[in-house]
Amino acid sequence: MLAGFALTGSALEASSLLAGITVSAAVGGPMLGALLDRTGRPGRLLAGALVLYAAGLGMIIAGLGRLPFAVTILVAVLTGLLGPALSGGWTAQLPRVLPGDRLPRANTLDAMTFSAASLAGPVLAGGAAEALGAPTAVVVSAVLITLALPAAWRLPARPGRTPQTGATSMFSDLVAGTRVIAGRPALARATLTSVLSCVAQGMLMACIPLLGERVLGGAGHGAALLSCAAVSALAANAVLARFPRAVAPDTIIWVGALVQAAALTFAIGGQPVALIVAVLIAGVGEGPQLTALFAVRHREAPEHLRGQIFTTGASLKITGFALGAAVAGPLATWSLPGALAFAASVAALAALAFFAIPSAPTSGPERSPDLR
Image (cartoon, rainbow, N blue to C red; front, side, top):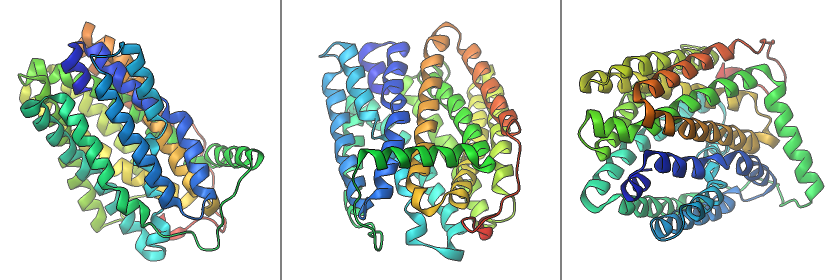
């Protein structure tokens, strides 16, 4: 997004580029998850996805300003098909690495890695954009993704699992995963609320360059706001890691949406200090909400569909984020406070949506009571 803003000078085209690389995850996520569940070496598949994603980033930055913008958007959309490999594809492997009683705390620490990366990433992006130019920041991002290849390659194999083939079987797996997400109320509620929260987060992201430019004195400075959110998210999850069973994850999910709504409302004023405080509050809502979402997925997902449920959930969130960014781009250009107010309304709707799906008793051999 920073590269698009720097090379085109348009917040609309910058947000369109961000939307392009994220919106196609809705298609790529379920397919990637089904493949991860069907292969005996999911780490090898993740490694291949990372290589292709990094290559896609390189093609995007090479095309910006040289190819028609529509072509660059198309490359971004194709690259975005592999976006869930950067998040849900990894977290789905956690129970095979740290099973049993160690999983709840490991789940919180796993979510903290997202916050830590969100802290370092924007600082690195903003610093590289200021010192070397926004295109260089994209190149650095591609390099960092390739550095994850050894970790992916060395993920443990799935015992007793051999690769499966067949389009009919693949379709059956996709249908089964979708049924689980829609059919288990706790999982459906968590998914719906988290996706709507991501719509609001995408709207905030689209506002970041303009907030940086108008409030903090430079579009690149807006990236520091994301680091503020990551700091508070990391701190909140650090507290949660000490008491992983203190609050039910289902409760944290809808409360986190309300906290984000309050933060976005506070940001409307457009004053530097108030804006920083608002972003810090937003992180307090986002960090624990992500941890709680992982816990619900681990608790509700059948083992043979775990990868698909995680990547499908991640892809829905990424797509929600993309839609939010796409809507907020032109809206922020017209009225930045209006875009923030709309984002706050969507976050509040996310909390209400949690209760729109009736709850049901949770039981069954595939549920893990130590994650409740």
